[in-house]
Image 1 (cartoon, rainbow, N blue to C red):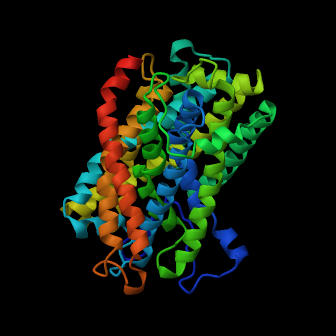
Image 2 (cartoon, rainbow, N blue to C red; image 1 turned 90 degrees about the vertical axis):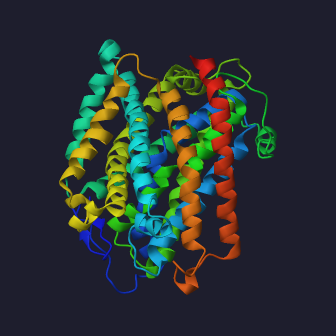
Length: 454
């Protein structure tokens, strides 16, 4: 995949065409032609935080925690928007957020290099597990206890081949569009088959209530996990690299970027709402809780009938093909960006992908190592998603947000006319406070939650 260097040049095999250096075209048609990075980013999240957290929340707690979904998606939008803002409107011409973080504190890039290594392997494991679960179930559970591993091998090989193709990002854009349509269609069909929505309960679910515990996960743990995995994911840092694929590198692209980001959030909101409603209307009150893949399949069986699980497995498989390759490259890019920015090694290369260790590390840590989640006895999809991503997200979210606030709220780092307005900084501070609360709540509830499921 091609990347933008600090000087604005691109490097790498992806070969995405840059936009002209003049002002971009305006109007609906030009915006629709530019639509893509936000959807790719949005769809890369779906499958870990969203599919799982929304299903577990709706099944175990009905509509009572739906307010966390609104908070989470709002937090995600403002967090990503601030990240994009620094890339496009900083006064130094930094094309890398890591370069900005280094201006705040020299140790930031190295910190993110380490955390992105850990976080990336956990997230990639969850995505690969989702894909192998989908393929394993769709094709009749062939392979026995090693079935997930056998299906994981072709996904890994296919990802390695895709990331060496010059059209990788374009393929990811199209797969994201197809995946969003199929997933939305599947859950719309499930909702039609159910034939009801408890609108009164749904509205009550927006009142910031935390219900009594039900199922293997505490209500508070699920609430902060939803906010953390959906709203504060460290994968939000991938968006500038997707922007670079389109050549968006200055203030003139801000309007197009905001349209793109908002457009990417719409299908994400629809998918989360549909999943949550289907889970709430099928399982809430039945005594059935979701704690593993079997619970998700049972949910879809009750909603749709015998074809329900197949729709779910297709969604999981599509998510693997969309997200696993995009995030393999993205997390490697983040890790090496932090490594190069925080150490002298970066002076030896004009772009991180010129580092001979880049492809090796990407293949090893973010493509091959996740295969461990497919061997017999490995954690199931629900646990790796809820525990793994929420804990690491809670640790990384506060420093990310505090760094972004510092970068975007002062003329020291931003062009004068693009410094945050007071309300923009206030929103980011609220999200940072939620992140700190999430960290406390997750750590406080982690031991209890583990005791329930082990």
